[in-house]
Length: 290
Ligand SMILES: [Zn+2]
Image 1 (cartoon, rainbow, N blue to C red):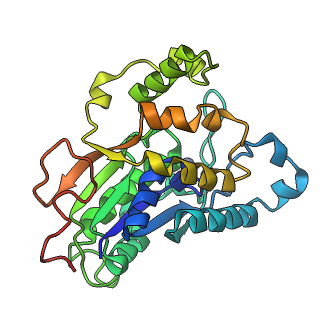
Image 2: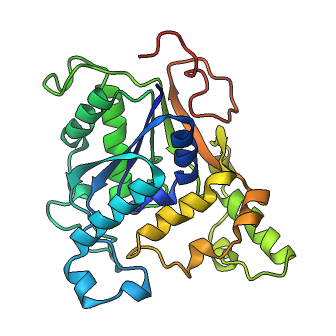
């Protein structure tokens, strides 16, 4: 049985990044695990319908329940790493991060629970964010750092010797789902159909970065699972406005214009010619899989 592990910063990231690929692999019988580094305790409420005092007072419990609903919809096993959300620092200059938060941990130490999980789940493929976190939230950047330490340390018997039997995953990927070319393609298709594009403003501020786009190595076809992805996102009711940005582009248009999710292969211990369309390329069908 193939095993895939996604490492994410907050509850909801597993549904907003690479979620349709997740569902596709679950559908194929892959054992998919989502690791959530923080509890999302400092996430702002991004859905006006949930902006209520009772929600604010119980945000940690509510986000746990939302995550439970999302993981049921996606069909994954989910693990909390137990770190505390850093929050999005607002202001100029930005205020210091709150004491004890995930953004301030030492990744060399904080990798231990993730090493333990990698050694017990034994994923063949691991995904995380790039060095910029995908977007510069301190928890996303720390998620990258902790993932990189854990990915290497998990296979090294001299590192964290009390955290289980060493395990070396075959491949490591960065998530690239929010790439500019995708936004441009959907934006242009919406304009062509006379629809109001939610990307117009963003694209003006989002400068082209061909070097970053060129890092994409892997496009996973997963359009038929966009509907499930959207249901998982909506389960994060405090974070996602069902009338908001995410849902403005009609599903059929997305499926026609951009039916894939993108990844960057960063480490591979198997032969897998690029570009590829499968996170398990070079892994699938090996006779030494265990
Ligand atoms: Zn996040």
